[in-house]
Amino acid sequence: MDLRPVVVAFFLSLLLAAPLARAGEVERWNRIATEAAAAEKVGPLVESRLLAIVHGAIHDALNGIEPRYQPYRARVTAASGAWPEAAVAAAAHASLAELLPGRKAAFDAALAETLARAENRQAAASGAQAGRQAATVLLAARRDDGATRAVARAGGRKPGEYRPTPPDFTPAVFAHWGEVRPFVLASSSQFRPAAPLDPRSPRAIAETQDVRTLGGEVSSRRTAEQSEIARFWYEDSTAGWNRIARELALARGLDEWESARLLALVNLAMADGFIGGFEAKYHFHYWRPATAIRATTDAKWLPYLWTPPVPDYPSTHTVLGAAAAAVMARYFGTDFVPFTMTSGAPYAGITRRFWSFSEAAHENGASRILAGIHFASAVRAGYEQGERIGAWTYEHALQPARAD
Image (cartoon, rainbow, N blue to C red; front, side, top):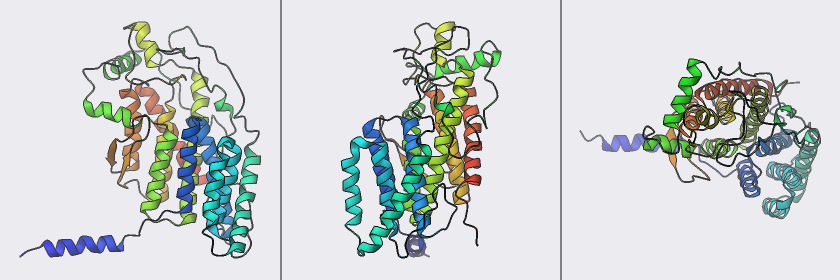
């Protein structure tokens, strides 16, 4: 018996039953925001704050039209019949125009493109008003959150204390970020991990040796695939995990409200991941592998990929991946959601497939050891902290609206 027609019919039925992906307005503005942040080179910490504001405003604007979920901050009441796409576009536009004023002309053009599609001008005007109101509230709430403070932190000299890393020995940056007011956490130290290893302990020495042989600029131990993993995950966490969330929202055919909630939760969690992670980084002020290796075994050692000029513990790259994965697993009701992702700059074009969010988050963390950037203990601590931040965010923000 030839089973090929049966098999073809079965898979065709699955394709026809699956929701069609569509380019929603929420996803469109997420792409506009991430591309603008990359073009302006704002860096991942500033980008995390920016995206949390943008997507918090988008979420609240839509819920002013139809209150499906609790608002993040703005209790907007839109006029009856307000156009949702205009609310999304106006909320994102108003937020981005203030946060990235140098690209206002591009944001103006993107907003105009949305409004030009409106079939009802009054509905578009009402939606846009709701979007601007939501953005105004969010921007005002974050205006004095501590993100613009300048705090210097000198390097240490004792074993285990952070000091600038080779090859450029740039002084530590963003020492103030742990004092930025969190978006959802009760405090930046809420999930601070336990203290890092004593640098003289056998376990710390073993971790140092592991990074030296596996994560060096030259390594006979690191495989070709491991080098690819290090490069694949090297882009800013904010960019990579937003791409994952955005493409899943499109693939699942989520409507504007569901997309807005997903992207808001992911970005709120990642913004707090940086705040909580940097509070811990500068609390412990622990040295990087490059410093430990050059001080103990190999004075000329360099990592496979460049080390950011901030303390090692915990790995905030891992914090953000674990936080985003925790949110998405809860949002979709399962961790086991297969997806494919293609990397962005600086090592664009690498494609990898994952069977679950946690698998991706664990590989994301492991990549920092393969790159020679973090100790294994910093990655473990980062994963635990990020998972707790993601769970907390999902449980305490944007819950279903209560029936009156």
